[in-house]
Image (cartoon, rainbow, N blue to C red; front, side, top):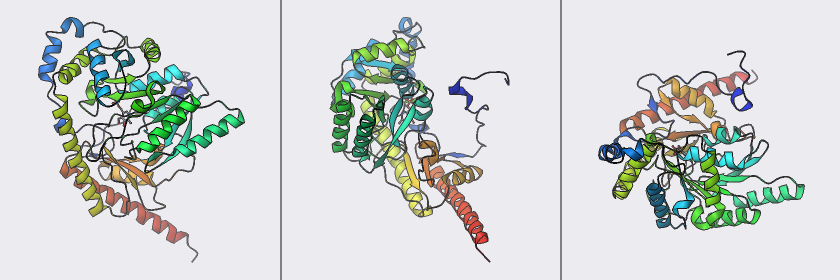
Length: 404
Ligand SMILES: Cc1ncc(COP(=O)(O)O)c(C=O)c1O
């Protein structure tokens, strides 16, 4: 292995596989589904493997099963967008959709606009194409469009190339939980259209809403200027790896050709289609919303009771709390100490495209999606203990540094 000359995109990656955490570890790190809310798909799988086996056990059409593409298009139309089945590509989850967008749009040396912070799995995907990040801050209404406008104007004045696309998670943003306001959405779509930069809307949590009303999607507002990534992962089952890209047909055609899997699994697509076309999705969506609302409320109560030093926004949907720990506390140290205490969380530095750009270091993300109520209570107590251990070590170090 020492003699292998790795490509740039692989050279800096970890050379060991991650080890599984010890038994009894509580997982607040990954956005896994709550096991109790995964749907029973046995009837759908039975039909998919029996009645539909000539379709499902065969290579499938590259763009996806026509019936599923049609169903997704109607689902998006019901959500306010103007989309036809020709504008849908079935993919192996939203992350796969993002990879195809990058393959289609990015050359080495290009740049991409992301929020600071942004979805951490998007970062290595974009980076692996040799692109750099233009980070734009967020406030409680979402991406600060005024700042992006200034950055784009400045690039134009300097004669520098504009970013190749703008990536954002407008609904229940990962990790911050922020939902972009309607005004901001309109402003963002207008700005992107004015500069002719595609907007990539990644919205897997859109239907995981606990309260309040939905804002229009960027796709509904921006039409062909927007590439939307969607997924059945958060709505149904992440293990199926079924998602979609909604975009203008010439883009869908190119991404279909850039797919190296000869088309996503027809078996999994058929299972999803049988479930959705069978009318089961609305009741299931309600179960999903109730489950994660209960988990959010349980974690919020635990945070207020046992971790009052941390401040956070209360997300109206999605899977995550983004905590600001007291000033000067290092999120990475708390994450390490929490793992030693038997709870996994994610340090905030992982969510920045340019991690050395002076971002706050005291942030951590906690997922409430996967744990049971008891685990949420116990896990927050363990995070609180980890914070106290790290804070005490800090004050001892600061004390010993003081002049005698
Ligand atoms: C913003 C965002 N996009 C995409 C995904 C992944 O979606 P999929 O499992 O469909 O690839 C996630 C999952 O955590 C996410 O938070």
